[in-house]
Amino acid sequence: MRIATTYEKGEIFQHFGHTERFKIYDIENGKVTLATVVNTNGSGHGALADILKKLEVEELICGGIGAGAKRALSEAGITFYGGVSGNADEAVEDLLKGSLKYDPEAACTNHGEHHHDKNDGASCKEHSCGDSEH
Image 1 (tube, rainbow, N blue to C red):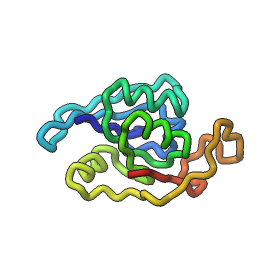
Image 2: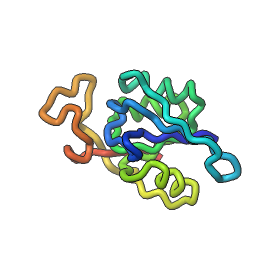
Image 3: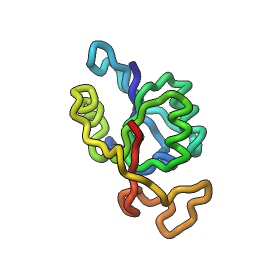
Image 4: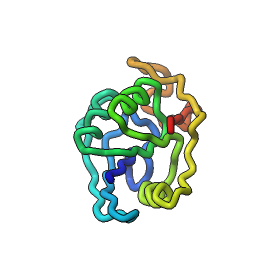
């Protein structure tokens, strides 16, 4: 199994569509066997889901995530957990233990193809979003 997190300085990055790195975790027998940081090369929402699919990621832990990204991940067959913050490694361990705290009901309505408001580039927590689909 392979799990990914949006990633920045050891933490879950809070805006899926702007993530510059994923941390990829290979899992065997319920344990992390390998963790690697992958650069996204500035790819946008749809391309990020494609990157994860090509990396054979099955599950994603992230902060905020908009409707377009949710759709792209679903189409790629990737299960995702949004609204997560904190240490990336700890979040993966919590997922493996079945104790990950995420928000399946939150909605991020402030994202679009052209997100040009005063919060552009800010973390989703700063403009009250962070959603997921389980």
